[in-house]
Image (cartoon, rainbow over all chains, first blue to last red; front, side, top):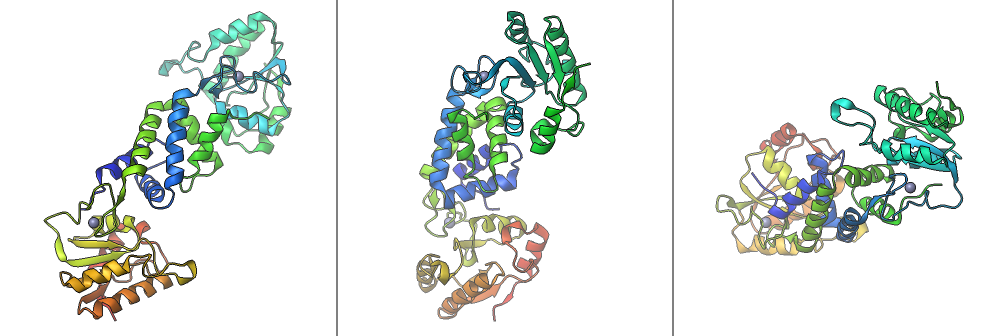
Length: 200
Length: 200
Ligand SMILES: [Zn+2]
Ligand SMILES: [Zn+2]
């Protein structure tokens, strides 16, 4: 049976690190780059190496950035007294695009899931609590997903906020229950955000 | 509106060189690598740069390889008197996996399409004719796609073969008309290959 050359095989295998890319589409991608877009492939190799080496997270909100502070946290135009709390970095961009929210964000990078070993520390809740104590934040908007774990996470953070006399709201249901925030359409997101209600 | 950091934006943009990857999935891929699989991203960057720099084509059959001759053309176990002619490198692997064909291949990397400036020279037909003249090849199997252009290409190559008293067959219809060979299932491909018939 015909085999790919070692380097072509290795490229097909390496492309499978991308989410949603199976053997067939990895092969299609490898052939496309090598036959039709070597310049694009070269650029991707360079940018990827640089991004993996340099991109870290914003030390305030945990958004991916190669700078110490992300563009949102370092902006002079943002309301620094409001903090919207989301599970994933992608949720920040989805919300910011769909709503007129102008406060800051905090990215949990997950949700409480004791069975998977994800506790408060893994979500950066110790840092978050410290910021709650500092007094600059007067309102938080809980925008974790409407899954069981997302709700438990919201509940946990709400208690932390109550202890610091911070106003808490939760985005309105309207997003499909059990759905992932980043795949919801702008209209639904906008509606859910505008219709957020007092938490508990 | 929140913006990605310059390097994250650049990565999302660079990922769009991959076929079938739009803005949303490029973003998903970038976040996945940066959040969950930096090792995979680093490896992809390295292998991609190396492949783009080193992979060329086999000087006999035009299959992608970083060596002078591909594994098929340099194999001692292949029947060197039979040549199967396909449009794309991917077709070679699809046919070789689905059939018990053990001859050599020739990859056109396209099909005759005068309006797009793709003539015999672009498909390497001058080299192919030279090999026909040399006398080693006694049979060719035409496995170009069953599109109008694929048929015209098969016809053109068949004439070249007739002039050199080479036996010509065409893989049997059975593959969906107008379909691309590389997406056909193994069973159909195997059937079509086994049922190939004398050309014209
Ligand atoms: Zn930030
Ligand atoms: Zn070869």
